[in-house]
Length: 363
Ligand code: SAH
Ligand code: SF4
Image (tube, rainbow, N blue to C red):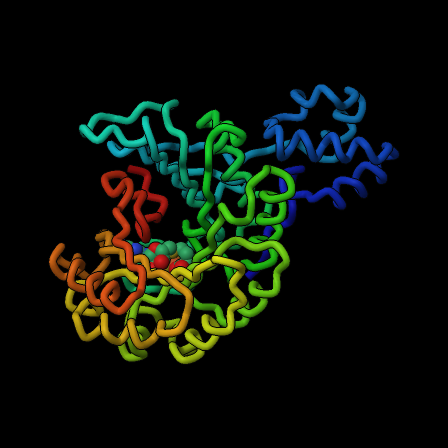
């Protein structure tokens, strides 16, 4: 799949800005000023970069170099405070990004729309590809297929645009990033990892506030474990045996559960870090007591937690939502075996912003 060429300034790292400055006959501190403007200051146009002389800005523009964030095409507000953004990239392709505030003003609780300013914690769920090729049978993004990878700039750009739209102050408010939007981040590995580095070195996110989720691209899990700076890892397990997993996640035919669990066991966790397994509960398919017991056996000995997600339904998805009792029973079996298990509450289901519901719907 062809990668989109780098366009504009967002996505360039310090080294690349340095060689750009050099190419344009500028001293190196100009690169530092640009870096500061792009990432920590989150400026949205060269005009606003008052530290740079006018001539240099004009020179950059004449080279097609602007600060361009993805454009907010639409946004949908949920009653729980969640916002789903539809972003348009420079070539017109669109992806979705989700803002989930928590704390005082995050969730109104009474069903009215939550206030904009009174949140103190929030999570941004970002996309890594336009669509997804992995074709999990319960996921709406899968129905799109994959159009293309996002560039590092487009991944970082989603974060910058949402932070600016929400007027976030990272010194005061705690924001987490999850790479769990549209796409499989580990099938766009170099761009995803470059985005991670720009977010940590530039925008100011500690690595501990980021989590990436993968459907199980084994070679990349190994590579990811070797990264000096990396988000936490979540693995979409979603089934307790190969028969079920292959039926709902075709990728399991390439990398089966034995390979996946071996990669999970080999994964070098940091001090006090836990691996997360995500498990989407599909009524009557993978959510029985027997399945729960198989999960206990699979994860035995791995320092981990399990996030249970009841299926978020959608048009074209053949599976049903499990009842509350089945979810509870599943959770209880894991907990009794000493495995921390959490039921993830769906966010923004009313606006199609919940897990697996991102499909660029316009309404
Ligand atoms: N492609 C990556 C990350 C994005 S999906 C991955 O699959 O891990 C993020 C999570 O949403 C995954 O754990 C996935 O299993 C889950 N998910 C997908 N479709 C869902 C649905 N319809 N309901 C609930 N969760 C879903
Ligand atoms: Fe792709 Fe993840 Fe959806 Fe599977 S669940 S199709 S890997 S986005």
